[in-house]
Amino acid sequence: MELDPVFLSRLQFGFVVSFHAIFPVFTIGLASYIAALEGLLYRTGNPVYERLAKFWTQVFAVVFGMGVVSGIVMSFQFGTNWSAFSYASANFLGPILSYEVITAFFLEAVFLGILLFGRNKVPRGTHLFAACMVAIGTFISSFWILSANSWMQTPAGVELQGGVFQITSWMEAIFNPSFWPRFFHMALASFLTAGFVVAGVSAWYLLRDRAVVESRKALGMTLVLLAIVAPAQLVVGDIHGLNTFEHQPEKVAAMEGTWETQSGAPLLLFAIPSMEQERNFMEVGIPYGASLILTHSLDGEVHGLKDWAPEDRPYMPIVFWAFRIMVGIGLLMIVMALVGAWKQWRGTLWESEKLLRGFAWMIPAPFLAVLSGWFVTEVGRMPWVVHGIMRYEEAVSPSLTGGMALFSLIGYVAVYAVVFSAGVYYVTRVVRKGPEAIEVETPREGGHPKRPMSATGATFDDEMPQPSGR
Image (cartoon, rainbow, N blue to C red; front, top):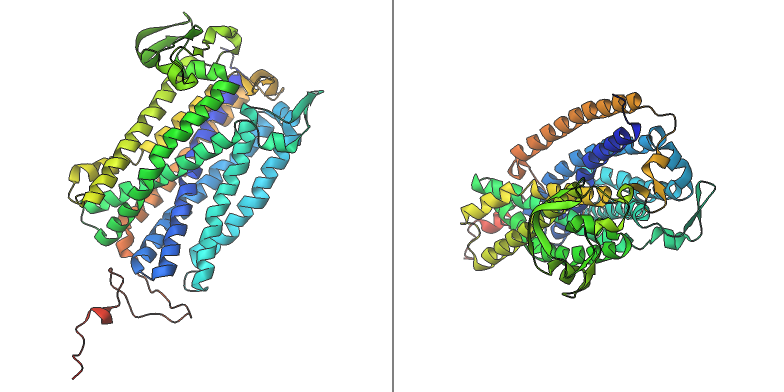
């Protein structure tokens, strides 16, 4: 059997990017949470915030390292597996990826050292500034990466001349039609991922009666964020979907499971799409639902996948089900966030053992939602590397063989298995140790330490009986 280098290269890049994506989406949100904790510590001096900040900074450092290691490989693949694409897109992707390194990675690297090792060695304001710079750096990095990916989805500001993309407008290329919806959708996904991980770990501690003060504080803070961000993600996701409906209608046809162009298209809740027979089996749907969501009209027209030639169609079964997994998890997040916030407002959250267990079980959910959304985005772009302009067959390295692609794929899987195992091991060690094991000594603004504080934030001298004054 002859090995297909195009398929294996796509499989390899999909594996590497999927593995890598779960780390930045977590660290982007976690960096902002750490910055918030450092800000609260600076304002209040409460050691609870310091213990939480130090604990989650340890987690951040491990996951950030895994993200860097797994991300470096992607740039290599542009040269080894996709040299034709690299050559054609170098005028745009070369500068964009360089800007990401210069403006974001260097910023994160410099201030991450201060964040990790500068506590009680630099002024508190400097340490807070470092935390904020790390958080800002993660968003700058995502800005450039998502600009590059969005350009591949909705190319603009370029012309293909002699097999090379020539820039006609940098502003149009960077801020291409799908950039802003994709950027905000990913930013909220990062907050949701970090938020549910923090909430889940905090709930896990509370169920075991560990780090009670710290965990209540962390869970209470996070639920306020989740109750706002989770519903907001539904709105931004809808805007992103409408943008995709305008610029990549074949992707939406695959997402909705629509084969025939029709008015009043139903919203399918369940179906088994068949690419060979160009139809669905066992359909269960809501009449007019898809038309209402996509066109805001009951009789709006929704394009079917048969409007495109078979060779131009994305693979519907993966796109269809990945989209439903993403939306299903998103709706579950909204329910969990609102119920948790309501119980917190009622003062019954800490006694709700079932809900706390639910948050603990929700830790993997945002990662599954992110990966599902990634599959929708990338598989839905098939068969194009640059949508409507360059196909996968035109982008792969001309001298690459199937055997070479298979060998490197096996190598990446093996190495990443080691990286993932080591990362999970160290993160698990940090989590099992817990924030209650962290000793803190909060310095005064002038650099002199205060007296030790209790978990309530008062000094022990304040809590001791005071003389009556006689």
